[in-house]
Length: 257
Image 1 (cartoon, rainbow, N blue to C red):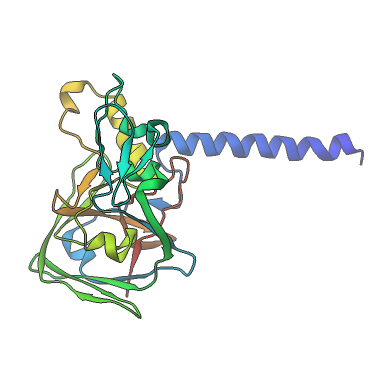
Image 2 (image 1 turned 180 degrees about the horizontal axis):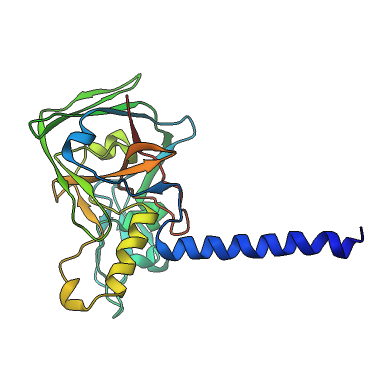
């Protein structure tokens, strides 16, 4: 058989595969985690856990590190070292004036502390009476949280989710979980895309109350998304470092014990 006859079937298969992938993406099925069917509060009860992998690294924000002087360079405490504005451009508003962003340190390396490997086992146990308990154990730190409230929010554009009141965000580091440095947590890529498509296809009057992110810790809660990942029901937590093109859920993802 000639090379032409060999390549043609492969090319047709590739084109059909790409077309199917695009079709699935437009329907919201693209990605390894799917919406569960017939979800109820009883279906998520029990103990859920995750272990942070050995290559999971975090970089802590520096608390109280920013001092602004007029419209000129800001200073990094405690050394008060001048730094050009363009190095932290997300602190500059659209009108050219300085505007503090709660998560501005994400795009500015001078506002971040040293990176370190995140390790430990996190557990969330959901009880039938609407309470849950969160624990975290590592070689250097342990945490046993109080009984806090949880609730299933079933009818939302981005799919069903659990509102976890008082939950600590350990995925950005132990020090971040115990600090008051504000960050913005967002849905994982597939759920964020589902939410954005809903907003684009509905009039503003129906979408004005929709908020994609959670301001942590001031909002006082974190969302966990019940999703079927690898054919198993999982709880996918909101993230801070979710890539815009990454359809695979990033840690943390809780699996039932």
